[in-house]
Image (cartoon, helix red, strand yellow):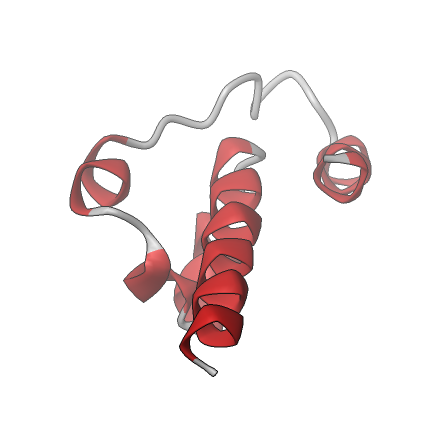
Length: 65
């Protein structure tokens, strides 16, 4: 039972990290995934190439990761 929960928590953490990397921090906050991130990751995340990519390209990149 505990192992199953840990597996899901790790997956939520992975999803939140991908969304943050692609400039979707507001989605992470809205869905409550921020609680699954480590403290340093919440403080120091950077969105890379957010300004140079369209929203569609960022969504595509998020889904591919």
